[in-house]
Length: 324
Image 1 (cartoon, rainbow, N blue to C red):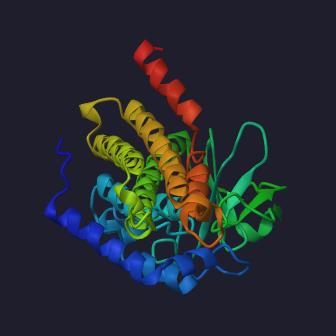
Image 2 (tube, helix red, strand yellow):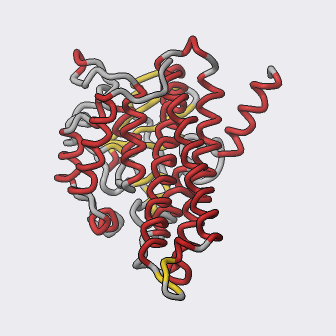
């Protein structure tokens, strides 16, 4: 098991980072939350990079890389706050026609045992993927009925609450559902890890340019400690996420379940705490709509509930250590 990225992996990260910066600047990211704001052309460009089929065998139209490579890419996408159903597309590529090349837009929902059934980007989607204990089903989105939430937590990710859940076509049984939940959780954690890095970089950049008493605020000891803590949290989260990604490819190394749960705990804390620090560094400006700091925090709040919560992850870790 090697936790150091190879030259090829570093090149992959650099390519995705450059693409996100060029084609998904923050004004475009914000526009995805507007009515009819989903840009399918840009989504197809993202798909054309092979983003959704990285870990899919070449015989099935994918790139044929390992799952850790998908983890690294999702971390880069999380850092850029790239919007859209990234998890749904990555999980369903190869199983649902058109997802791989971006021509079909999927929405995904992990059916809860109770409570509302919430779906992101439902109105823009073509197919609805439904995950429950019995397996994974797919149905056209237009046969499901839902109510749109006027103001979603993450303004770049519109959400709807389903009133009806179609029966759909079964594309995989309980084993696929378990795999999707585990891998979906890890990819969400990878985006959280990237989110924590992005908010830290935003805070550092502002601390270098904002001046008080004739010098940059980043020179003040109190801010140095805050930003150093953010960097440490990001590094811990990144290490946990990378280790879990490698273990998915090499399950004999250790408990994948524990690694994925641990990645969720460290990445969620890093993303939320670092975003709060970013807001604090910006001062009163940090709470305004125009400053991007709040977007990192709101995206983190959403991602930390995808395919399991932090409390559930903590319970998994505790039970595994207790031998339950």
